[in-house]
Length: 155
Image (cartoon, rainbow, N blue to C red; front, side, top):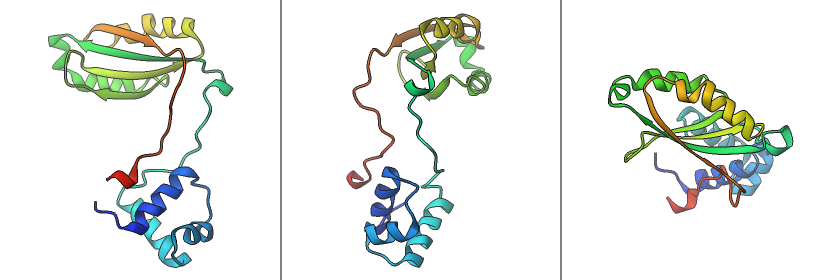
């Protein structure tokens, strides 16, 4: 969807703070309230704005471990991708899952209370998922950059 200059400004502002009032948003982007509201509604209807959420600091709620797990499925397992995907969707600790091209089939971002909780998750759930041949886990030691803001101006 091609975005005009106002829509880009709206998206950049909402990425920084989605709680901003329509009046404040309109003022920031240089529109009056009604056209600004219509543009936001249009972006929501088009699915450009998927939803508005609160971003929670995982450390402050006790989720100290962050793990990136690469999952390789067996040849037989690849025939049942949907079963794997449905099973992954049911694990709340898996907060992101991507299908990859290359040596592994999926990349998971997982958060848990601590490494022991990840170990339990690994042995009781991940390693038992349909078609799983191999799981390689990398534990993040620290977080250098984490953002949900997309670089709208570079598109």
